[in-house]
Length: 215
Image (cartoon, rainbow, N blue to C red; front, side, top):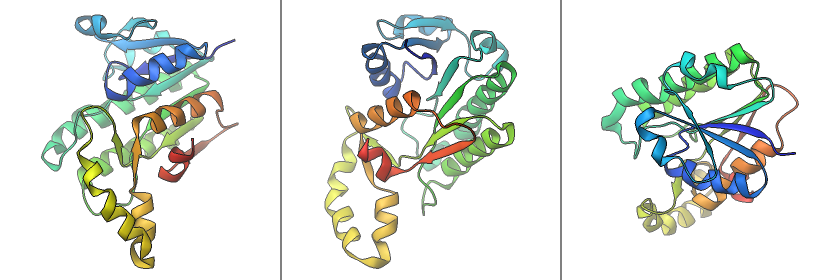
């Protein structure tokens, strides 16, 4: 029997790739979407009308058997979007945590970001606050920490691959290069599927770049 999943951000970059992968493996997939975005819900998934920033709008769609997958985030994050990280990224995970706690869900899967890092401090701060909210709520959760996910429309960092290879040669930069390494969209989807299908017994676990690549 498949796992009941509700995905926030299911019409976005990662969501559009994850939904068909879950459906192909026999899982029940529902996607949270505002009324005006119902038409963007991937084929095969059921639409749940609601707002990812408002817990009351989707808490009733959750129960003790649900895995909530939180993919909401500001598209193409840059340092200039600090206000959006607070308004969208952080507010949405706090809403998900609130809804999850009230409903007693089975498992929360949250895409955070690799850390620490020398750049994107506002983005990292928002994601750290999201992780803290999960921990404070005592939820059973899996937190994935990619740095940049390469895929359609998101390929420019491929030019940095030689620099990553050089950095991994030197002991002083090796750990940072690996922690902040690039992953592909297919690797990310595989890691998400694995996380959904093998939840932790309790508490929170974190999956870093190396583990995402191995999925």
